[in-house]
Image (cartoon, rainbow, N blue to C red):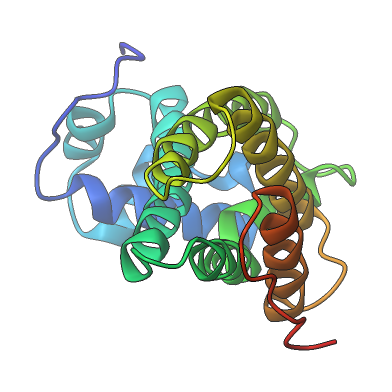
Length: 203
């Protein structure tokens, strides 16, 4: 079978991906087979192959699906606060951390570092680099739209700091999503030169 993932896919593509994520979280990546997915979704094995192409392509689709959810959460947060950059940052960080807190695929991959399945880790590493690039590009464009008193290079540096810090909290949380988002919004206000520096809500 080819490793090429169908671009659009049919009506069963998303249920298959979601079933694979759930099975990976419960039993590990090695337990995921096209036959088990077919049984779970109620389709034939050939339908699973037709939708995803191969197990490697399925892994890529699973990780892409979860990372797309993160980027969408950030985009929606900024859309909710078109006139308040700091509030948009708070909302975006909190949304991402809350999503990560309930992300079965990330939990399954994190557990693999302790001696379980290792197959998915290279896939996550590759996609994490893409997520970093995409998130920084999207956020730079959005932040510049608020007209901060910074050069584009300064905005890029600030975004890089915020994105990397947020991702570190995704993989190793040190506080609740709300309190972490609060702290990073305060940092963003100082770094991005907000005329009004917010107080820490949970200080």
